[in-house]
Image 1 (cartoon, rainbow, N blue to C red):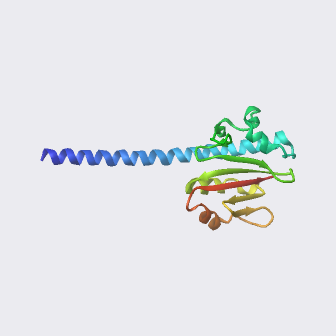
Image 2: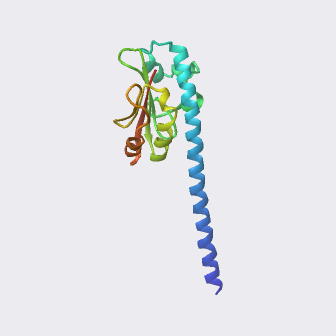
Image 3: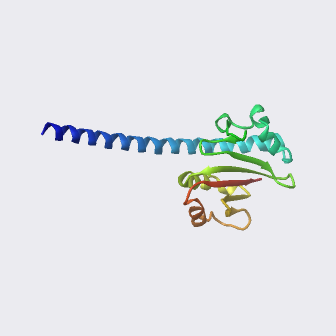
Length: 167
């Protein structure tokens, strides 16, 4: 009887630990997504302020660390990936000017399903375009609302690149 009780206590303890670990990861990801949303807003405001409509040098400034050195890139987004790009805990961030230099894109790579869904809905109306993978889920001037089903479909398998185009 003692051995059965000890085994049952061990099983219950392992179940409680597994549940606590799952809850911790869920809360940690939600906090990281919330912080990334705030930092995305700050990054956008800083880019608009510093570059004032001429974004031609933005990609090289992101790649060589100038955005971080000048304070344009919030510290929380300045975790450098192996390639030297700004990054989040999920993957690299590509920041580039458009071909004509009149706009720019911020692309978050390697996002999981839930992170992609939350970040993809964040202030989508303020962007010219929002894309999940190869799918445009919002385009200013043509869409009246976020294409939530396209976002869900694009995000469902995870490892998604979410691209925001400004202005």
